[in-house]
Amino acid sequence: MRKIKIAPSILSANFAKMGEEVEYLEKCGADLIHCDVMDGTFVNPITFGAQMVKEIRKITKLPLDVHLMITHPQSQIVNFAEAGADIVLVHYEACNFTAGYRTQEECIDDIISMIHRHGMKAGLVINPDTSTSVLRPYVTLADQILLMSVVPGYGGKTFIPETLDKIRLVRQYADAIGKEIDIEVDGGITEENVDSVIRAGANVIVAGSTIFKSEDKARTIRRLRGEV
Ligand code: DX5
Ligand code: ZN
Image 1 (cartoon, rainbow, N blue to C red):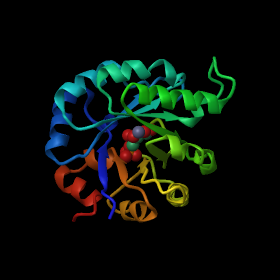
Image 2 (cartoon, rainbow, N blue to C red):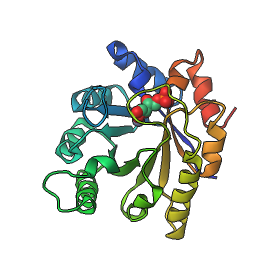
Image 3 (tube, protein in one colour):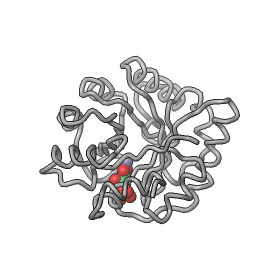
Image 4 (cartoon, helix red, strand yellow):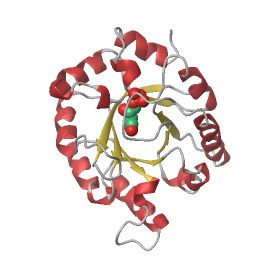
């Protein structure tokens, strides 16, 4: 059995009480802290950057899973490494038309090796309308694949059911090369639909509103992990 990891998204936290929120998530049994970095360009909202991640690093020993919803992600890798990020996830779509690279592939290869050179795990993310097949060449290089199950930018949206087929396909790509890759799913995950996401082959579950709206976060985290 694959270990299921729960990554609460702090996008739904109270930003003015971030330290307490993260401390409490750790107490409640979270496996990772999912940090949503948004730049107002790649997605409309602006959240926070490396400075916030650096402060969160001081609060928790849990791995920090940094989801970069930003253009020109290559310019930020060193900042997040210095801030203490453990996993950095870049959007396939953000690597398109990025200045200084001849092709999108060259851009992605370079960013993944930059993340590795800085001692972090590298993840590649696709939006719901991007074909899963673009990920195939990167299943070898990347440590983690993140499938967006909502259009990125906001919490509390409805899970797009077509994501289940995308999860199965990425798991097939990884099995075909004998790799135990982490498959993460982000957006609209609830206590009701999480079982189907895990059954499809995902093992890292992001949840924002489901956890933050819960009156018993520890129980909700256990439920999302399939323990209750
Ligand atoms: C959305 C973010 C998600 C978000 C998920 O763009 O990437 O991490 O916080 O929130 P829920 O779980 O509420 O859909
Ligand atoms: Zn996210």
